[in-house]
Image (cartoon, rainbow, N blue to C red; front, side):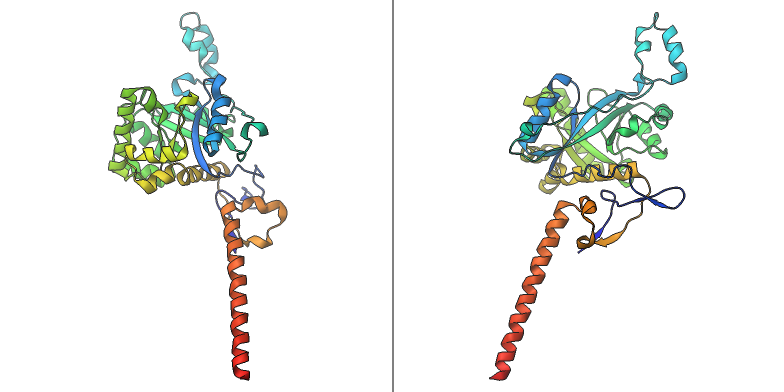
Length: 340
């Protein structure tokens, strides 16, 4: 069986000199199982319980999200001005010059007893008004540590300007409490899809508030109207353990958001895998793909092969052995017939 190193399991990358160099992360976090790619880090007191609950519900790939609004950021050379204005405007002194560090969640073996160990990712939710945040992003090393980057534009022109810039995000999020002015069109939707951006629907806010539920359903039907619900995945966005639901319930909930049965299943697993793999490709940058037989890979490079590919190779080997045995039996039968 041939195996091609792709965005999620690339063997090596090409540097500026044209030489091949190993990736920065020799063992990237590959997704598997059902995905919940939005567990807010706040409130911190319940994040550990929510992670354990998600594992118990059957999720194997989780993303801990940290939310930052563009208005909370400021340039470093303006920090001293903010300090002078602190007496007059206390909120000005609370602005950040860089993104917060990605949170670290440690799941002990006893926390997932009887369940597979989850893949814990980090995610940055960035609510933007315009492109003025990009200089801060370009100079930030902390922001690039996050596994996933989600943007929540406050208007359609804001999203259009981001698509025309060099900034790349993985997820287009929707915050019904802060964003009400995004008017979608078929062209805008397809541009996001062509740039490998995925759309997220959170179901937990719909449980908390009636008006939020109406707004979220309306937005999800806009996705269906202008983009046929392409590249959509569903996350919880839960801040409480009681708001979390199992993956099969979430897939059935997709009918409420304009998804059919197949799209609902993809929204909790397949599309989530694509989001994580695309984010790995964005962080890695340009790469070179290599085609190599799976059985010829060294033991230290077996992590590059997804689990489903290994299962397929084993099945193919079993089929080949069965075919060989059948052909040998047929040959022996033919020889016996000739002797007679």
